[in-house]
Image 1 (cartoon, one colour):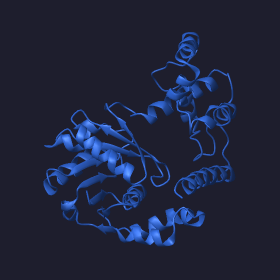
Image 2 (tube, helix red, strand yellow):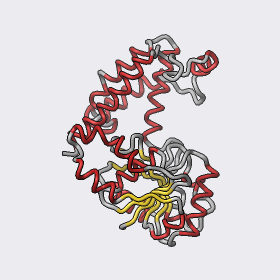
Image 3 (tube, helix red, strand yellow):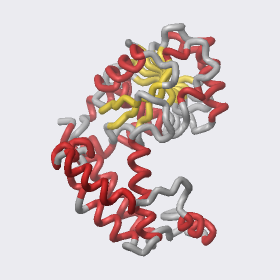
Length: 304
């Protein structure tokens, strides 16, 4: 593996290109001209300030990233990662074109957070070399990448992609079955379902639910995952707790009616100024800046 192609030069595509440039020559394609280097420099400024990335290393990595509006130039790519917006027909169209251009042994990946890789690759001739690579946004700051096998992905393809991602410093996880939500979003939304249910039922208000996560189990999650936690407390205790508490948890299979009521009122979250909580502009800025600083500090600490 030497050459990587990224299809789509939006912010996700740019930063996936930056991630892969640690080890590979990267060609970024888009239908419209883009200043890919400028976008990457802007996103990496805080890493340079924090000392997680030197100016010299940044320039060396940018030198390995090229941009083109000619899709034919991706023909020599060993791996192609599509990073366009979430449109099934567009993704299928792009991969149909790529299959005509690229070598039969080139690996194809779709960077999707929700769409089925089996459906996206449905009409390809070489479906065994296709999988999903779900980079979490911002791609250069969040270590996780979910590698998702379709109903036809070969184990060899999945392993090669896992190795490539690990080699550029990511934390890839393998989703062996093509299921809605993959791994991390299923876990995340199971938690959200219970959180919303508790607010809906008047068990606690939204801020209290958030605080319970942030200052309790959330502090453990970076070093203690749920399966490790279960083993830590013991399988017997896990079983006994589940036998008692699971029957009382939310088990709805449709969105909460509370969400529907909020939508009808126009309470859309931060973008409208109100969701589960009030969001004046200064509070939105404070929270988003705090999240960004936390992620940058994490990378500064772990990349030295």
